[in-house]
Length: 317
Image 1: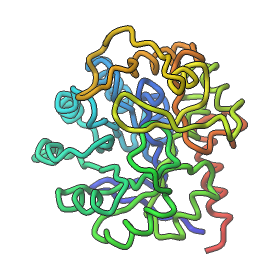
Image 2: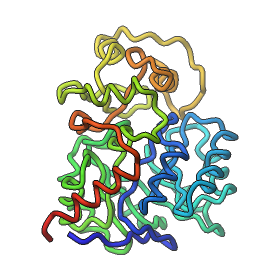
Image 3: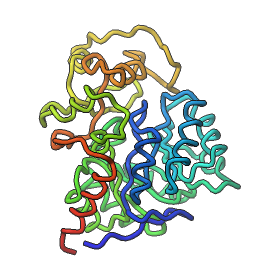
């Protein structure tokens, strides 16, 4: 199977592979730049990062790569507008927007060079994004990690959106771990794929060794859907925290970050995500996609990209 370039508005990636933007410091400039330098699109995750830290990271990404510089922003965060404006001021090429739908983002980008990619989980949302001016869509199914916008499989959703949207690129996401997975969606008509979980187990991912080891140790049954105070279900690797969430015994020690538009206050998700990134993988929240149990090595991002291309191209048309 021969891979084609991925054109999103005025920007072109040599390879149609996007590294999903993972928040709370999983995908920062070293990872995003490495993927973009390898020919794909690397994405910085903007949530739970101080604005000045984010600005510096965007500028560092621009310094590290001549490729596309992109940021993922969750609509669910309180600082969505402020964060979007910062990204525009810093001159990012692409904004990936998910965890809710923002009409405002399309007004904010007017007069800038930045393009918007909407992350959607239904035909209705896809058509709305297309009408509003999205330059591409990422169709994300229930196999994804982190917050989930649907309980339907990407295998069900993607063909529906692909049939409905013809004017802009449509990418598949959720549960894609290797090039053979990706090739299935290219055969369905995908213009590209978005992968996040595979890139956690990369040298450039800023997660600590204990976090990455959770992925390598995970069994299929360890990866579960869980309750998030954001108001959306999530997918994570079972640990002490997940057991407490399921038992209803998880503690809420107060809102430390004022990060969400709406929050159930059952527990502080930012605090728990940051605990995991500090290495406390039992009391912290370790998000992952459904296929994390299939990972068995940690590699440089460039090698991951090389392997993906080799696997995809080995699949007959």
